[in-house]
Amino acid sequence: MSLPVSQMWAVSSYVIRQKLAGRKRYPLVLMLEPLFRCNLACAGCGKIQYPAQILRKHLTVEQCLAAVDECGAPIVSIPGGEPLMYPDIGRLVTELIGRRKYIYLCTNAILLKEKLEAGLFTPSKYFSFSVHLDGLREEHDEAVCRDGVYDQAVEGIKEALRRGFRVTTNSTLFDGASPLRVREFFDEVMDLGVEGMMISPGYSYSKAPDQEHFLRTQRAHDLFSRILSNPKRRWRFNQSPLFLQFLMGKQEFECTPWGNPTFNVFGWQRPCYLLQEGYAATFKELLETTKWENYGKRSGNEKCRDCMVHCGYEATAVNHTFGSWRGFRDTVATTVTGRF
Amino acid sequence: MTDSTLEGWSPEIGPGLSLAEVVDKAFDYRGNVTVVRTDGSETEGYLFNRNADAAVPFVQMFDVGGEGPQTIAYRDIRTIRFTGRDTAAGNSYAAWLRAKEAAKGGHPARGV
Image (cartoon, rainbow over all chains, first blue to last red; front, side, top):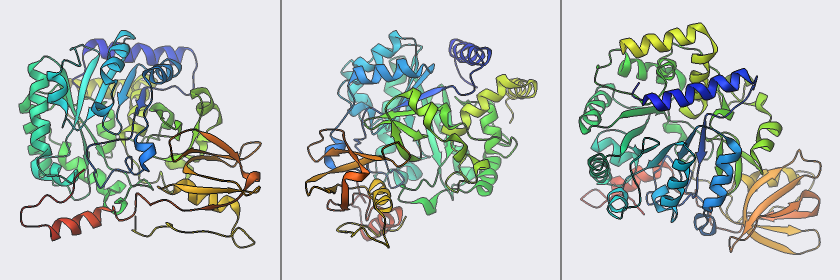
């Protein structure tokens, strides 16, 4: 793992506090979507398929902060849409840093260099750019449906690193990915000097236009095993090693859909970041009125059957680390040995 | 996802088609709809939420100007027409691949 000690401590102490308080359901990462608007139109993304009046809407900073305060999660991930198109992104990040939230600003990085040069952000241990890269140049540009985006993202990463920012990458691996090419991609990303990488399989959520293209469970286990079974020491991942083991089929986890709650212009999304089955007006209402038993593999819900996405299982992995001696032992072992 | 769409659909609620079914389809639809109330008035906009389990089942929508949300009880809805462009139609990965093949020769396939 590549997480800073302060962040590991903040998350660990938060999880332990929740357990001591006897909370059955608690959030780990708030997925805060201030807008749906984006400067890309990726075929795998259903987030941007809205009428114009919805794409023009965005949350106010005050709405964002109220959601952050109500939720209480120690980590705030800002996806979208493209958050660098959010007009108040600088102020939002500053306010979140002031609240000592660990922030991952998930960006395609097309605008990153421009925003950095405009002085919109200041480096902080609480703040990381999480740059979307789905593979090497050819694979990434194909995934985002536009040529040249990989080079723009790399340019943005270099500029952010030069200015002293924390930078990670997030990658969705699709069906048909070449393990060899993915391993080459990991090498290339680490050569850039990023803090760590985050990876996840894609998901066939019902509103995604290319669901036939996404991974199913067995193929996903096979793919991730081939990618990760002989990891290089210099690869660093900014996520739970138990989640990576889960991707390889070495851990049996159930989904924790409330672990990464999502707030956007429609409200608190039920039940998770991927499925859109309705909205609650408050986080409390989301927790108390969502029929959680209807979601996850054990529920039999066909929408959850093949899902292995980080937003459902990373929180499970973290909970497992602090919820059992075996989980703690496995986490320490993988962290020390670097092997999954 | 296929490229089929409900765009232009103007369903009649009746024995073979319940209002709840139409509401669910409107909720899944990625375009504006027009909600026709029992009093004959209409609201056009994006229907983003519905709760059939509430004490008084309701839908919520932002109108075409982005104002809202407006909350409308199921009992006040006569039907819902699928009047706006389906923003998901024709945007499948397969469609993009087809466009890319057609554009081979140096032109970028698609972008915004």
